[in-house]
Length: 201
Image (cartoon, rainbow, N blue to C red; front, side, top):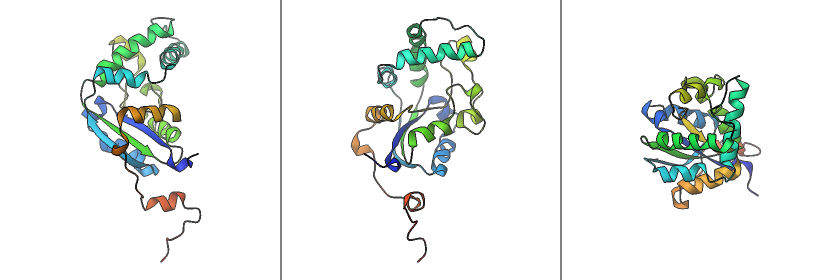
């Protein structure tokens, strides 16, 4: 079993994040928390690659549909369908258009509890209900209602893996092993060495 400090997660700066020149700001949020960047690339993905990304988890379609329906009900709004799979079909088509509309930046971050902490920094899927202090809460005005009205995907700047298993599948989908770099940062000693040895000469 890996030590929690070796946990890795995938983050994608989506086309709107690139176009709004927020790449550096997003990187800064993760770096200053203590995460180590171990892989990065810029690409314009194909629709097939995006569809595969979102359906790596066979349960994604059902879960996404159920979550989308629940978010409408919670706000007292009516979803366009009560069938989770029908809802997800529309969501996925919109995501493919959105994610292939321009360049994206794909990254792998490493550090203690990377999946959970990166998700916390990222904020909820819908910017409208994301907490202030999160990336989505601070930099996006979009909502499910507005996206549905315009028949498009919600523009929420970034994707981050939902759990450890998902992170492993997504990293493998976007990177080969040679593209991920194992190295040591000086700050690793402060974050992870048991006794913080070696600070004083």
